[in-house]
Each structure stands twice: as C-alpha cells, then as structure tokens.
Image (cartoon, rainbow, N blue to C red; front, side, top):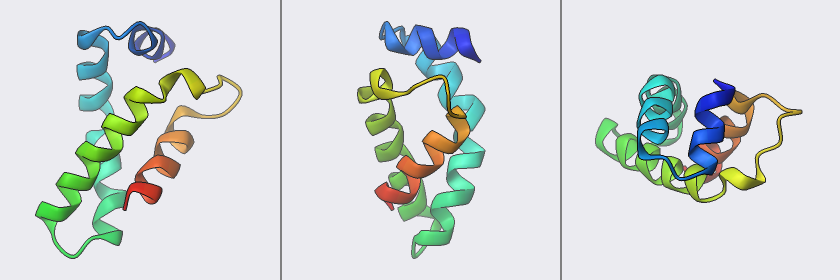
Length: 77
C-alpha cells in the first residue's frame, strides 16, 4: 500500500486507479450512511477521492491511510 501512496504523490495515474479500486467499497460504505441514496453516495465517493488525491501530500505515514480516507469521505458527505 505504501508504494501506491507514493505513486499517488507523484501523480501516477495507475497508482491512483489501483488505490481507488482497493478502497472504493470501503469509501462507499461510509458515504451511504450520510447520503440520501446510492447515486448521491457514489458522487460523494468520487468527490472524496478527488480531494484525497489533491491533498495526498498532506498524508503522513504515522496514521492509517484508511482512517485518513475515512475522515475525507465523512467531510465530503
């Protein structure tokens, strides 16, 4: 996972795609709780990943990436 995150920090599209695919279901499960329907939840997931990729340089290895992503998804919702 560390290599994918490093790839995302270099704006590597393949790393971003793999990270997205790996965490999509997790992110969707969070956003469904805060959305009115599944379509809205999917939109929030996509917005959340865009925020995550644009702010990936702010991610610190000291915390779990999953927790960091969860926080972004909740705030995006």
